Amino acid sequence: MIERWRSETHIFHLPIGEATITLEDVEVLFELSVDGLPVAYLHALRDYRGVDYLHMLQWLTGFQPVEPTALSAASRLQLTPVRQHLAAMDAEITDDSLPEDIDRHTRLLLLLMFGGVLFPNISGNLVSLRFLHHLERLDNLLGYCWGTNVLGYLYRQMCQACMGIHRYVAGFLLLLQAIGLHKFYHLGLQLLQHTGEGAIALHVFGHRVTGLAAETLRCTRDDKRLGYKAIYVPP
Image (cartoon, rainbow, N blue to C red):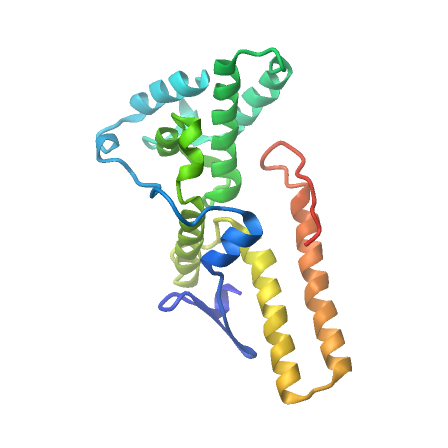
């Protein structure tokens, strides 16, 4: 699919036509908002160093990595110690837990989701601590246009892979796999109906593509990167 991607237009060029992943796909199928406040990098954070981000992490989540090497560059944190801390913390979170403790647990879990699912980099084990600013007030979380940023980040990662800047593809790949195959399936239906290839060819093509999409979702439901088993919901 990356070989068919054109970075100039952000469109897949296929033998059966052109297709791309749209904001509507992100919003309707994954319920990620495409309207609201931008997920922007504040100017006030530009002078932050690693120690500043670690202080913010401690204040908002109650978590402080033991190993200094857990922090990459100035603002990226390894996900492995985050997973381990969450696993140890799960037993302490109950219905009787203080709201402050639940909020800290929630922020750390959201960081894991950002770095492991929505905005993963090619290492698959780092999350940007710049997201902490948007997690300070959890009530405002739904007011941001997360869907727009997820799609833009995926576009950027595919462009870099297409141009050979990166060897691997990062981003919300489930969006690329599940929605992309769904669109290609419907493009194939349109082509076969238009050219009159017949019901047999239509049936074979449809089963091949939908079978591949189903297998992709089955492999994704038990993704170990989060450390939690995901619930599989058939499309």
